[in-house]
Length: 206
Image 1 (cartoon, rainbow, N blue to C red):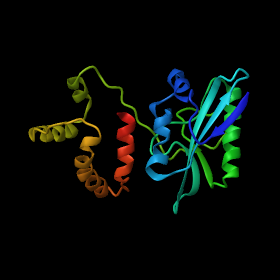
Image 2 (cartoon, rainbow, N blue to C red):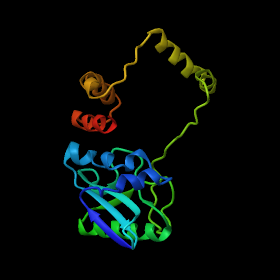
Image 3 (cartoon, helix red, strand yellow):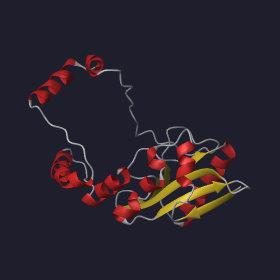
Image 4 (tube, one colour):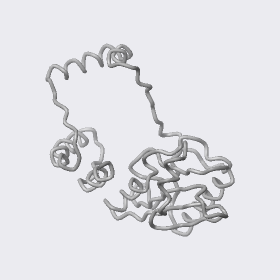
């Protein structure tokens, strides 16, 4: 097995992601490249190949810097998922070791691999200050409404009385979207990504 580190995704990267059972949409090369396109962030694609040249595992890494967290590598930023994918434990260990070597060579303060499962066989430190809450949706809107508390149902009914209209679109609706989105986020005290980030995301989803 050999490890390859490149600044662009290998041509067979997405094909491997599509057939891996633990993959997410955020593993796809186009999603990984959003940080580079929107902010010029250094992006690294780690790929493990077997003796025949076939992909056996992948890991996207994106480098960021901030006053609060210093210089760090993550897989991947802006999204919750997008960690290491591999065919077996041996490949997992090899890619994880390569990620550590890359982190040392780039002199980052920390390396964050975003997984929804333990990264065996390597015993990395696990963050417990973040969590994901997943709600299994029932078959109908009525069934979902019955699962919600009465206060939340009344809030939803109040919004429905305003008869809002929903319009779905891509890049053509970004200006209208961005005229409202930052105002809502700033009211929550959350930093707002610039318009170029959403342009890249919309282009990816197109």
